[in-house]
Length: 250
Image 1 (cartoon, one colour):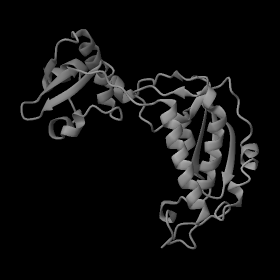
Image 2 (image 1 turned 90 degrees about the horizontal axis):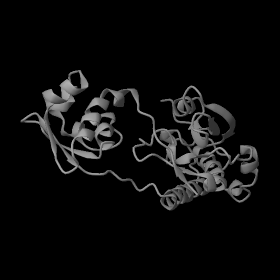
Image 3 (image 1 turned 180 degrees about the vertical axis):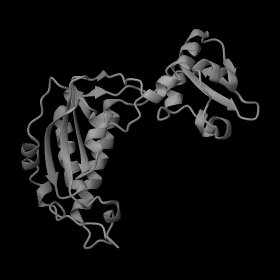
Image 4 (image 1 turned 90 degrees about the vertical axis):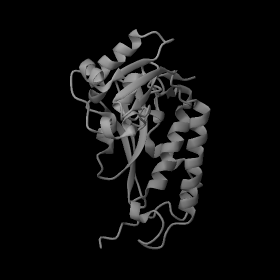
């Protein structure tokens, strides 16, 4: 059973909130055409240079904070850079965040991880070594009290990933160091396998960089990561399970 969690507005998105508010005041039966100057009047500041030179700035994709402002108002932007105008067409943005799809993707990732673990590289010139993926990683478990959620994830040792994902109020519940990314991913996957019943579907405007698909309601408390790891008897027989290879310093 999954519910939907709403993503709070980022600081950058809040800049364009007045534009979204205006678009919501326009009938869905009508297009809303504005000059760039009128957009600037609404948000109370000058648009960045890219808005006048890069069509991509007006693409209607959730990863862009300005785009989320009009996507939340059920609009798609069609900009004319030469005329410096933009038309917002009524269009309800949807995203395929169904649990079954997420589970298939995760299963594919696990399959690839197991393939890599079965054929570890022999030296620093091997596959994925240059990306640091054969260096030690940790699987971590966070509690996000503001959302009443747990989140599992993985990160290279020493990275700032955990802090950036969880934010100031997140609490690290557990962490487990693994020899490489693939072993850490196997542990992460099996934690999620235990948590699907409480999984919460991400907001349709989630950017994806906060691990939103790896969260579940905190009524379901997962076991210690070490216990999950100990249960992976077959995976631990893989040739690459305990292998760590560091990138060449040259």
